[in-house]
Image (cartoon, rainbow, N blue to C red; front, side):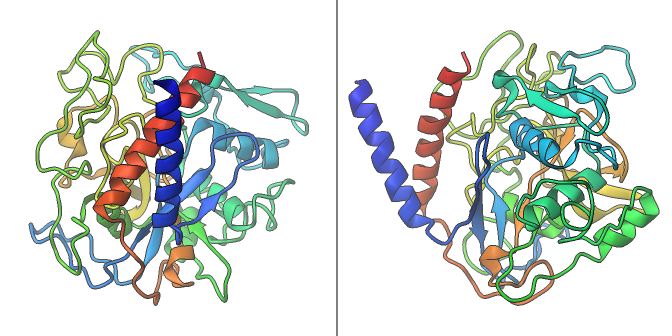
Length: 378
């Protein structure tokens, strides 16, 4: 049976790779790579249900998964030996819940060692593929710049974190971050920019039915209008995933999947995808967007492991301070590469959309690949 499964997984991986030949992948040295999915249908309109969101007139890429603790740890080791702009939050180290605290949720078990100027970072193997949390808008912008600059190592300066998709120039205050992120740069020529998705980009990738240039959207980012299922208190998820499943607190009891992790591995719901093929856009961790609230506040989308089903729906928007670092908020990255250089602001022709076969293969490939990682983490 193992030989049959291995052969099937290998075949599925080859077929999926063929179907998404235009999709990009950022290669990480020490942890899971970061693939992107094509989002086209460049004539789509806002949600016909009247949300006012979702129309995007250019093609772009959306991260298949949320950014993981392992990926963020590699980022810290590359640029945060001194950590000039506070990319590490001490709450990242402790994964336990602290009931009654203002920020009760545990971190992703990212440890820092050494002294300023020679800091080093590590993450526990069982947390490596779970979403990072305790990151601010500015942290996400600097991670984006680092990807855009080719993931270099060095001090936090223009060559690593301060220039790229965003011209930060040392910005740390809400007003300075607002100016930098509201004026995201556009790529020129063949360069690729990585950035925080706009609210419309996030909404489209999560909810648009991927049925052409339409205004048709699902209510949930699980390709469904039905409330997703969840793991009841003290129970585990059905394996294999039956589809339309998310990590959230569905009954007001235990948060997410309960102790010690509360958040699932990325892609653990292997048969639950958005219409464009992305995982975990419902639940697990809230995701920063470039969307603006009012004043120094930004929009978080997608719901979280510690909240009910209302947070998963298309109608739900959370407003949070740009500098807030919270245990229930992480992020996902968007890419200009699939937009023919169009970036966040313009141009870019349509790109091939994932077929039903591709979405099936992506789910099966995730099942094969992530199960291998789970075995290695035991």
